[in-house]
Image (cartoon, rainbow, N blue to C red; front, side, top):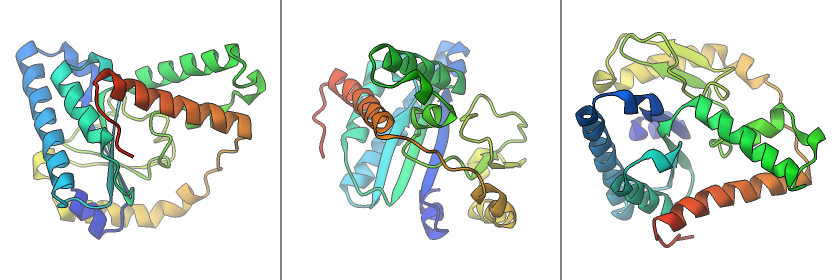
Length: 230
């Protein structure tokens, strides 16, 4: 999928790997899913170190404290690798939009209480810049495979202006031709997306958001005792 995106000029891909709601499944199924995700992250890390994946930056977003220690270690090692960000891969893991927006609300309240931002700074733009995915633009395309017709609490704030494609194809059978067809549909409607308003910020807000991003990343990396490579 990453190779297909590169060939089509797509610079960012976000994958919904595991929802917080998935923890409600039988424990054996949860363990199997998390083991597969851990193996996938390890494979990406090997490919980056072996230069099979170049110019890629990987981030994992969600409530990572809910994950087993071995999975958190693997994720920390993956995010500690600093590559060029010509292609941004985001893996949503132990994630829901509900949890993300709750976290953002708490962070903004903390910022106001600590006088890091002013109450008048709190608006739609501030919420957008405090999201887990504030390092990439809002989604252009949302692809829902397997005949499902619901969003499953995935990046709801970020997908407000997205082109949405619901397809019957199962995810394991998703092909480059499916992707090309969806991109063609997007190209037909992309002008509507380009007309969306831009987010305006001020210096105080930018400092707050920068500090918030650093805190989130550093706290998680430090908890796993991983050296952050810059």
